[in-house]
Structures are given as structure tokens and as C-alpha cells.
Length: 140
Image 1 (cartoon, rainbow, N blue to C red):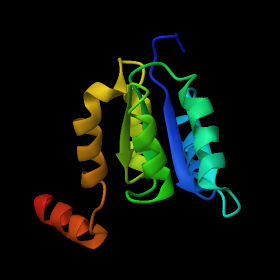
Image 2: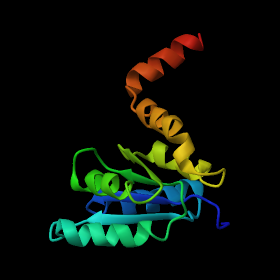
Image 3: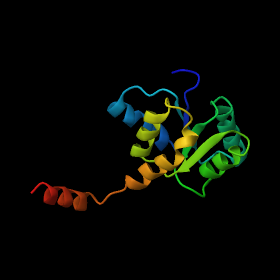
Image 4: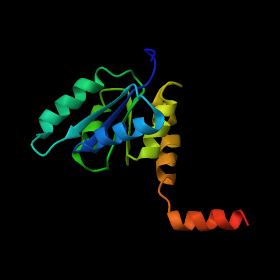
């Protein structure tokens, strides 16, 4: 990874960000430049904020934080840090969103593709049975 590559920080309630990253490595191989920090029940806001800020301070400008959902401590922490650091923040962590961000991180600052990444995240939620039926009709 070159020094200009964007990095990704995953912020989640509990360890599911770490588990998602490990699961995706089975699909796409070794993952560089992606970090995770779990908010645990015994963390105070101040302690969590400090942990996250320590990581964000090391990340190149234009990097990205992906949080589990909006309105919680993870996204509130990221939003606050975005005032002091040139980082993007997206909530709604999913496997497809993370894969797309990983695939784009070496192309330049991820803050310039936030809308594309949000669209991927929004489009990743599907009614599986309806999708199968539609594909079946198209193939007939």
C-alpha cells in the first residue's frame, strides 16, 4: 500500500466490524488499510473517542470511517472527528459497502466517492426471492 492510499476505519457496537473484516478476507483475500474499533459496553464516550481519534490521526486525508448505524455513539464520534480531520463518514456498514470501499481505496481519496459508496450500500439490500423470480423471468 502506498502512502497516498485512503484507509478505512470501521466503528461498530461490539466486535462485528472485526468479524466482518475477517469474513471478507475469505472472499477477497488479505485486506490492508482497514481498521476496526469496537465500542464495548464498558467504554465511556471519552475513552472511545480517544481510541478512535488516535487511529484517525494516523490516517491519510481523504480516508473513510464506516459506522454501523446513524445516531449512535459510533457515528456521533465519527461526525465529531470529521470537524477536525479531513475524513468522510458513512453509516450503514454492510459487506458490499465495505468491499466497494476496499476496492476504491487505492484510486484516491475516498471522500470523493462517498455518494457512489452510499448508493452501493443502499442498493445492497434486496428481496432475494423477488430477485430470483425476476432473473428467472428474464432468462425465459
